[in-house]
Image (cartoon, rainbow, N blue to C red; front, side):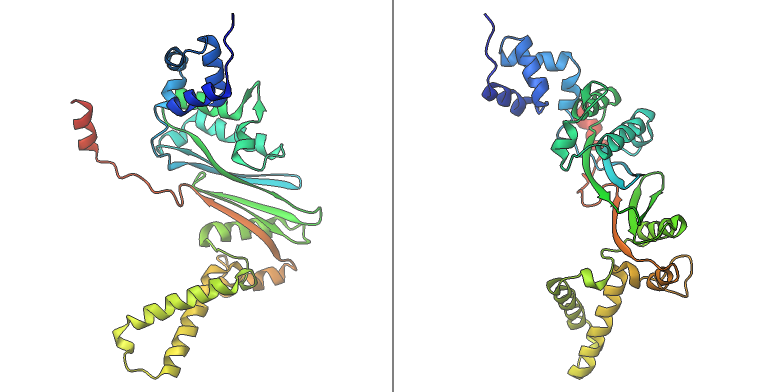
Length: 297
């Protein structure tokens, strides 16, 4: 008599092992619902190797940009070390994930991981790579962009995938200009296309930061309020310029700003997306001597 594998049982095994839901169900089915045996089954099938690494921090890896027709993607796949990011299997995995997601309607990581490629889900493909390569590998994030026929994508991958970005230029077929702006975004890391994209609260926040800096500057003590306000406005303007793509100095021509370059090309930037590997991830500080000492205890 076959045992009914309930959702509760699957969840319990998943909570214990961090393995995928389908792998947990398969293990429980093979072991007649026995949690302990199912855990061993996961280990025996190479899945436990991936599971045991679930607590590690994957802050290295690669980003990738890809444009096909009127769709483009920027994606980040993480690994634990930069060395693994150069592995041929890892590079192939990034390509598989980017193409699969771009050719789907997936909007979330969960939807992306459920996509089936070559007979297995991306989740399973990544887990298999984790087991084979020996490091935790994760799909961290992706953005899919779309454009009109009249617009042009520009993409740029810097330092072999440490930074990737895609920009969209309006009403142009100028691929060179699109590529130049993508390089600008990669190198200068703007946060906005223009000040029109900043809300009032953000600008006020930046102004308060400059005011705080000013208050701590002893060289300005005793200056008239009008002078101080002028200094704040000047510093705020400079700070906001650095954040806005169109206000930045164009990297190929230090005499003009990006806005002037775009005007020469008779186009505008409608959007951009830029990913840098590991940005925002708190990396664990490793003590190699301590790790070795713990390993031999």
